[in-house]
Image 1 (cartoon, rainbow, N blue to C red):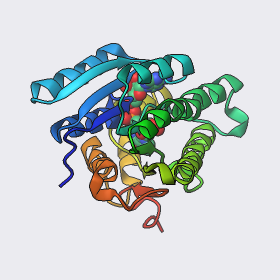
Image 2: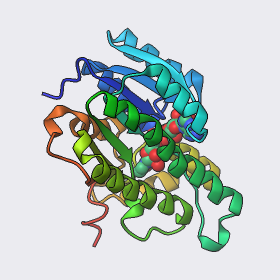
Image 3: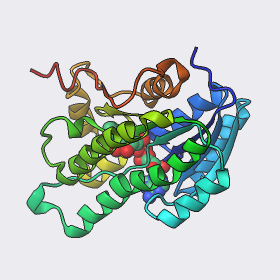
Image 4: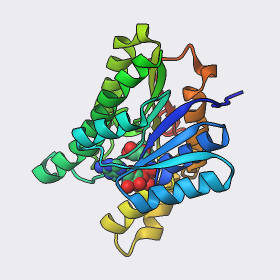
Length: 254
Ligand SMILES: NC(=O)c1ccc[n+]([C@@H]2O[C@H](COP(=O)([O-])OP(=O)(O)OC[C@H]3O[C@@H](n4cnc5c(N)ncnc54)[C@H](O)[C@@H]3O)[C@@H](O)[C@H]2O)c1
């Protein structure tokens, strides 16, 4: 089950966190993995880990906000069966404390970056007879979270883009889903704590861990397992859906 032999996968943000765990899992399951990241060193590290474990992987250095760069990179790769959009950035703020510059930055990476990769990937998948797309949403799109104005906006857009793509390419054999994790312990969370709560990182880490009723944050590997399922042929009847993976955050916090 869940073998990806003969499949070519591209994982954006594959140099760190969830994207890295997904790339490693795909490599273990037999896919040829293109690890796309703006950070070449981190992408290289992921590729090294995959190849050391006997898998097949390549570095793809690219900034997802730049459409021409993305299109060229995807064309160079040529064949694509699976796309995982994991590259993303975070931000803390309310509507009146989010600067225009920060709003634009979140939009550029989390919304336009996903659009750019869809724009580049879909023609390749159509040529190839189909494919599977998985977008990283967030529970921030499903309920009112404090101080996440721009970030929540971006993840709402990810869920809407997922539905549009799932509908528009139904008959091209392209499936498109999203997942919505609660907090996952990755450098994304550590960086966010260091930036926004300097000196209180450990306290805030405990506090954020407890907001999941299960009592902790997810491990990237736990997220990668759901991504693997949704991108595998075993999930062939699943499209146009969002899957919470949240330790009970949305439904058990009452
Ligand atoms: N960690 C969490 O708690 C959590 C929860 C819900 C959703 N998510 C989502 O999951 C995704 C991955 O998060 P993570 O925790 O693994 O983050 P991370 O910071 O560990 O990794 C993100 C990767 O994306 C890359 N990246 C950033 N901007 C890029 C760009 N313009 N072009 C190419 N690559 C770029 C970074 O270099 C980094 O390697 C994000 O979309 C995030 O919003 C994370």
